[in-house]
Image 1 (cartoon, rainbow, N blue to C red):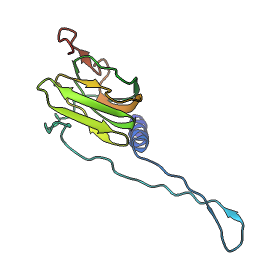
Image 2: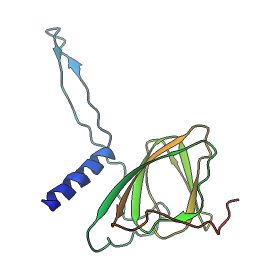
Image 3: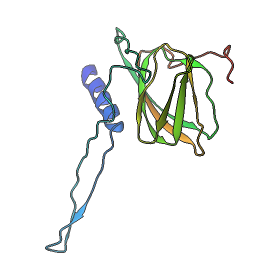
Length: 157
Protein backbone atom coordinates (compact mmCIF):
# COMPACT_ATOMS: atom_id res chain seq x y z
CA UNK A 1 0.00 0.00 0.00
CA UNK A 2 2.81 2.44 0.87
CA UNK A 3 4.52 1.75 -2.46
CA UNK A 4 1.31 2.63 -4.33
CA UNK A 5 0.98 5.89 -2.39
CA UNK A 6 4.59 6.88 -3.14
CA UNK A 7 4.15 6.13 -6.84
CA UNK A 8 0.92 8.14 -6.87
CA UNK A 9 2.68 11.06 -5.20
CA UNK A 10 5.63 10.83 -7.59
CA UNK A 11 3.25 10.72 -10.57
CA UNK A 12 1.39 13.74 -9.22
CA UNK A 13 4.61 15.72 -8.82
CA UNK A 14 5.75 14.74 -12.31
CA UNK A 15 2.42 15.85 -13.72
CA UNK A 16 2.59 19.14 -11.80
CA UNK A 17 5.99 19.81 -13.36
CA UNK A 18 4.67 19.19 -16.87
CA UNK A 19 2.34 21.57 -18.65
CA UNK A 20 -1.08 20.07 -19.25
CA UNK A 21 -3.24 21.63 -21.92
CA UNK A 22 -6.96 20.92 -22.06
CA UNK A 23 -8.66 22.00 -25.26
CA UNK A 24 -12.14 21.81 -26.63
CA UNK A 25 -13.34 21.97 -30.18
CA UNK A 26 -16.56 22.70 -32.00
CA UNK A 27 -17.76 20.29 -34.62
CA UNK A 28 -17.85 22.47 -37.77
CA UNK A 29 -20.05 20.04 -39.72
CA UNK A 30 -22.95 19.83 -37.28
CA UNK A 31 -22.56 23.11 -35.43
CA UNK A 32 -22.79 21.22 -32.13
CA UNK A 33 -20.33 21.56 -29.30
CA UNK A 34 -18.24 18.46 -28.87
CA UNK A 35 -15.78 18.58 -26.01
CA UNK A 36 -12.48 16.87 -26.50
CA UNK A 37 -9.63 16.82 -24.02
CA UNK A 38 -6.06 16.37 -24.97
CA UNK A 39 -3.10 16.04 -22.65
CA UNK A 40 0.10 17.50 -24.03
CA UNK A 41 3.31 16.35 -22.37
CA UNK A 42 6.47 18.43 -22.80
CA UNK A 43 9.67 17.25 -21.16
CA UNK A 44 11.33 20.34 -19.71
CA UNK A 45 14.57 18.80 -18.49
CA UNK A 46 16.29 15.44 -18.13
CA UNK A 47 19.72 15.52 -16.55
CA UNK A 48 22.03 13.95 -14.01
CA UNK A 49 23.76 17.30 -13.34
CA UNK A 50 22.92 20.49 -11.46
CA UNK A 51 22.79 23.78 -13.39
CA UNK A 52 26.53 24.33 -12.87
CA UNK A 53 27.45 21.03 -14.58
CA UNK A 54 28.26 19.05 -11.42
CA UNK A 55 27.05 15.44 -11.21
CA UNK A 56 24.14 14.90 -8.81
CA UNK A 57 24.85 12.63 -5.81
CA UNK A 58 23.45 9.14 -5.46
CA UNK A 59 19.98 8.83 -3.94
CA UNK A 60 19.73 8.80 -0.19
CA UNK A 61 19.22 5.39 1.39
CA UNK A 62 16.07 4.81 3.38
CA UNK A 63 12.51 6.02 3.12
CA UNK A 64 12.04 9.05 0.85
CA UNK A 65 10.12 12.20 1.65
CA UNK A 66 9.06 14.24 -1.38
CA UNK A 67 8.43 17.93 -0.77
CA UNK A 68 6.96 20.52 -3.16
CA UNK A 69 7.32 24.22 -2.31
CA UNK A 70 6.04 27.36 -4.03
CA UNK A 71 8.38 30.33 -3.63
CA UNK A 72 7.50 33.95 -4.38
CA UNK A 73 10.32 36.51 -4.56
CA UNK A 74 9.53 40.23 -4.86
CA UNK A 75 11.44 42.24 -7.49
CA UNK A 76 14.86 43.21 -6.15
CA UNK A 77 14.86 40.51 -3.45
CA UNK A 78 18.11 38.68 -2.65
CA UNK A 79 18.20 35.36 -0.82
CA UNK A 80 20.97 34.74 1.66
CA UNK A 81 23.80 32.29 1.02
CA UNK A 82 22.67 28.69 1.58
CA UNK A 83 23.16 25.13 0.40
CA UNK A 84 20.79 22.21 -0.14
CA UNK A 85 21.70 18.84 1.44
CA UNK A 86 19.16 17.12 -0.83
CA UNK A 87 18.50 17.06 -4.56
CA UNK A 88 15.87 19.46 -5.87
CA UNK A 89 14.61 20.83 -9.13
CA UNK A 90 11.92 23.25 -10.14
CA UNK A 91 9.98 25.21 -12.72
CA UNK A 92 10.05 29.00 -12.84
CA UNK A 93 6.55 30.12 -13.81
CA UNK A 94 6.98 33.90 -13.57
CA UNK A 95 9.87 36.35 -13.74
CA UNK A 96 13.60 35.71 -13.85
CA UNK A 97 15.79 34.32 -11.08
CA UNK A 98 19.58 34.55 -11.11
CA UNK A 99 21.43 31.90 -9.10
CA UNK A 100 25.00 32.72 -8.07
CA UNK A 101 27.50 30.13 -6.83
CA UNK A 102 30.07 31.06 -4.23
CA UNK A 103 32.67 30.72 -7.02
CA UNK A 104 30.90 33.51 -8.95
CA UNK A 105 29.32 31.26 -11.58
CA UNK A 106 25.79 32.44 -12.48
CA UNK A 107 22.68 31.07 -14.15
CA UNK A 108 19.57 33.10 -14.94
CA UNK A 109 16.39 31.03 -15.09
CA UNK A 110 13.56 32.47 -17.21
CA UNK A 111 9.79 31.93 -17.22
CA UNK A 112 8.89 28.38 -18.24
CA UNK A 113 12.38 27.00 -17.69
CA UNK A 114 13.36 24.13 -15.42
CA UNK A 115 16.36 24.27 -13.12
CA UNK A 116 18.24 21.61 -11.15
CA UNK A 117 19.76 23.15 -8.03
CA UNK A 118 23.25 22.61 -6.69
CA UNK A 119 23.59 20.03 -3.90
CA UNK A 120 25.91 20.75 -0.94
CA UNK A 121 27.33 23.80 -2.76
CA UNK A 122 26.87 27.27 -1.28
CA UNK A 123 24.94 29.69 -3.50
CA UNK A 124 22.24 32.37 -3.39
CA UNK A 125 19.50 33.73 -5.63
CA UNK A 126 18.49 37.19 -6.75
CA UNK A 127 15.42 38.59 -8.47
CA UNK A 128 17.04 41.23 -10.67
CA UNK A 129 13.86 41.68 -12.67
CA UNK A 130 10.92 44.06 -12.38
CA UNK A 131 8.21 41.56 -11.46
CA UNK A 132 7.89 38.94 -8.72
CA UNK A 133 9.40 35.51 -9.29
CA UNK A 134 7.14 32.50 -8.78
CA UNK A 135 9.07 29.26 -8.54
CA UNK A 136 7.86 25.72 -7.81
CA UNK A 137 10.58 23.48 -6.34
CA UNK A 138 10.48 19.72 -5.76
CA UNK A 139 12.80 18.18 -3.16
CA UNK A 140 13.88 14.52 -2.92
CA UNK A 141 14.48 14.37 0.81
CA UNK A 142 14.06 12.29 3.94
CA UNK A 143 12.15 13.02 7.13
CA UNK A 144 14.11 15.32 9.40
CA UNK A 145 16.52 16.66 6.76
CA UNK A 146 16.45 20.42 6.10
CA UNK A 147 15.66 21.54 2.56
CA UNK A 148 18.26 24.30 2.88
CA UNK A 149 20.98 25.30 5.33
CA UNK A 150 21.53 29.06 5.68
CA UNK A 151 24.99 30.65 5.90
CA UNK A 152 24.45 34.02 7.62
CA UNK A 153 28.21 34.29 8.23
CA UNK A 154 28.68 35.03 4.51
CA UNK A 155 27.52 38.59 3.77
CA UNK A 156 25.62 39.47 0.58
CA UNK A 157 27.18 42.20 -1.53
